[in-house]
Image (tube, rainbow, N blue to C red):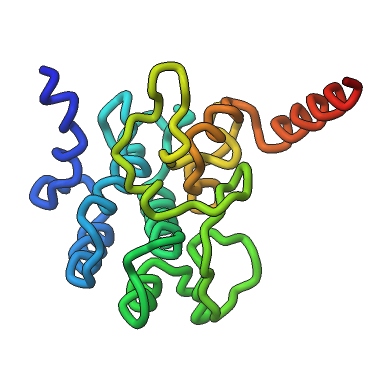
Length: 214
């Protein structure tokens, strides 16, 4: 039973069993593998973005009223954005023309826009060249995304572990789509908890003002 729990996501990322996944994802998966993208990265983003870990099922198969729900299109675009961000992260093994080709596969694509899906700004032809934690703003390295270390060591959070997070948590009304997902430090994600971005910032402001008194 322990082995099954450890490898449960491998069942979802096996191409031969992707009957319920969007066909575009199956096609994209194969194309990215041919371009040299690590299978481990594709497994990681799919397990994080498309599958609900606790329920072990795809997001679009649950009740639409559930806060974890996402349409196939939203889940696919969120997955593309996570791949894009991993490719541009510090220390990424993808460079030169290979990097450009991979990014083109997962970029916005509107009017030749080269920014990630769901960027929320003006469409541009230039590529983004760095990945920052969406909470603290520090650079995120590729090895942090791919790190297999436990998110917690004893009672201390491991700063070398990153996770997919939502800028506005799903429990606070955020949606699982490209505009709301990003790689975050695990400890930053845990600090924000279920607070919306604005509520979290207001809390930090109060904490800073209070501590200035001492």
